[in-house]
Length: 97
Image (cartoon, rainbow, N blue to C red; front, side, top):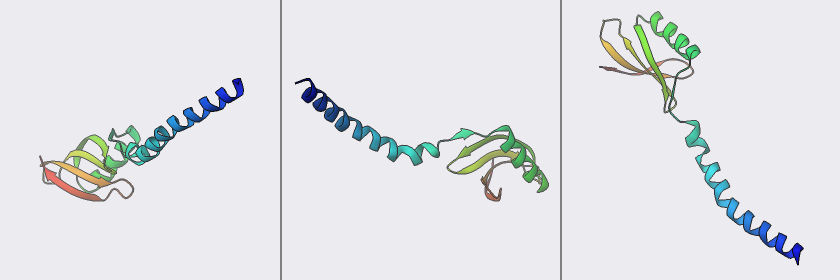
């Protein structure tokens, strides 16, 4: 009797655990793209790349939607929001503040 009860409990646990496991697997990519603040190393890398292009006052670095987002001052002296490629640091988009 104890053996049958143990099997029944295991089966019920497996059925209850399956939806949770599927939900976590489905959420994996979404969790990987979670917005976050940039690290000190990333900020230094982005700052060097932008300063080489004439930008200054590079600050407030974030990683969002697979891109760097950062505030800076353009070579013309305007306050701008920039989006950069994570790998190449190519400027993908620039908006004046």
